[in-house]
Image 1 (cartoon, rainbow, N blue to C red):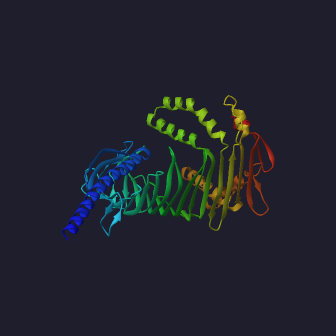
Image 2 (cartoon, helix red, strand yellow):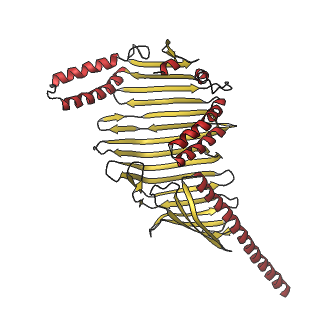
Image 3 (cartoon, one colour):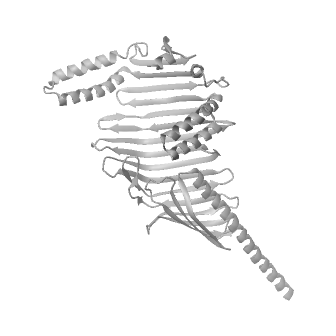
Length: 460
């Protein structure tokens, strides 16, 4: 019996030592992964991490740091406090394996009220997963290029996962509303019902591969003159797919309804795709754009573009990039629908001579096609002409009477519609205005008609 108790005591002691040792190891690994995530935030986002203090204990750690905008615009900083309970077995709703459990609180610097709270887990493989909640917050007026803005963030919540294996971020979140107001009252914009769905990984500096989706229930814009515009059912989708030394990217925007005063449009949709874009050229360009933005002066911008522009252009064109505009459509209730598509191709392996830009222009291939009902064109022209005529009437000493006004409006409308005839546009028997424009071997044609060389058309 005594021997059994001795064995049990040694076993308990071994378990205690093992738990203490593994807790120490888990604390070290948790710190490494958390620091890696903060370094990425500091490196890849508009935020920078400063005043980092990491007090690692045996069983738990405390982490304090400040997040602030990389470029001073009057946006207040955020003070963050983390408490990490070390693994590898973490209590709370049962035992969970992990390097550490996170409890995060954040406040706007100088405030005594939490703006952000989160709880999460640093998994054994280094993934950091957290559930967060945002509390409604109004930021003081922040500087913008023209005037000052006040920003109000509504309540929100979401889940965020960071995987250090491939610098992947998986994020699903929602925000009740976002309101931006100008200090002088010239205007404001509000977004309601914002939802974000993100699954992206860092492919190269400045390039994130994967998918991003944003849904907005309603966007409202108030102008200083009292006019308002509203967009409903907005959906933005972006996707980037690497292919060796290049990547393909797509961006699409859709809205169920657009209204402004008596004008009602929608649904509408437009998509843009970039194909065979050089990854190295893209990364270098984003880096140069940041250097130019930081420098800010015109001399630095000019010198940078002259020094690096030709070589970057050569890198981009060397892969034979393609740009496509597709699924561009807009409905106007009771009036008709506009459809358009376009493409620009640059054949791969084209010999480039930067001292002969004409050869590079002649290598371009482009095509544009659109169609729109005649009465829809007349509808839009009527809005423009009516605004011009009303402005003239307001400044006239002898404004036109109702009959004369309507006659002048119709005359100008007929003239504007007639101007659409010619080589660039075709009016079909079924009541549509169409155009099909091509660029090939440096020559422009429209609807099968020769127009001339692109260079000659561009020259003044």
